[in-house]
Length: 412
Image (cartoon, rainbow, N blue to C red; front, side, top):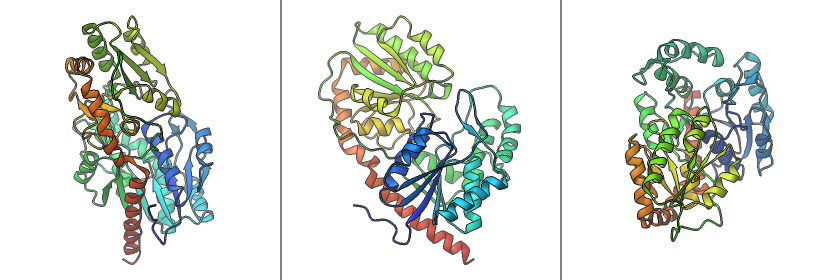
């Protein structure tokens, strides 16, 4: 069993996002808190949600709901502001719980309030950055370039950085949300190497790459053969950045080129492009849209499949769907060449945004199922990258370094 940092027993883990939504950051938070709770006394803090209450039933975890104003329609993102009262809420909670280290997972009001509370109490802070790739496909870049800094300052109370982090002014402004908070902490965690590179280029120094973790299914078995249809699972939000519509067009092209019943694709999730996805799926019985499903259903569908697919390019940091798929011993069709963790062997490249290439990749996998079997077999080794012991060992090292940095900062 991995040992803990000897002088550290009690930590607080804070996230702005709502656990009523099914997203990568939310799943990562849940899995990491439950892992840390086996070794530390963890105070888990997020907005009120049944899944937060559920997290509080895990060994070593106490759930503390944080009051919010409201949730954004459709997206479910909780909205609140870092007022003096909110910061004091964190100060009081950290004091009452005898917290020794604060670990934030976001950079909005709660994350900022937790940082300011930790500064007030002289506690070290670790920041897991879930995205340094804020971006939008909407044609509002100039408006965002002006409004995003004002919005973040209103939410957090922190003066914004103004670094050039993307060619588009709006995307750059939103990425400065992350930089504004990350530059105030003792150590930054990036779940991926390619995001860590971007964070270093932005001027951050104390960064460690720790891929996300997830409990591996005990009954997972590798794919040994593929009897038609080849079953592929796509999981995520139905938004432009996830490229769900290009994926569906590629799937339709692949199905048109293959015998009937040779390919089945299950899509799990919801979002603003869901209706368009339904229209694309019409007339193709091999395309099944499940809508939003609970995490256990994602794992069940993965277990019934032979392959997963992630089709974003330049958007994702280190997607939980990769962790879940590799742990389930399922290879992953991947379009973003920057995604590397856990994909050396399990990854099947269809790099770029070319829909014809993606369609041809699916066709080739149906015709050459040995590629699917090989990718699945490679997961047996690759999934160690996402194991709970690996995550804990790396996180313990980060906590030790954060404690050392905080002590050095305190002594001048």
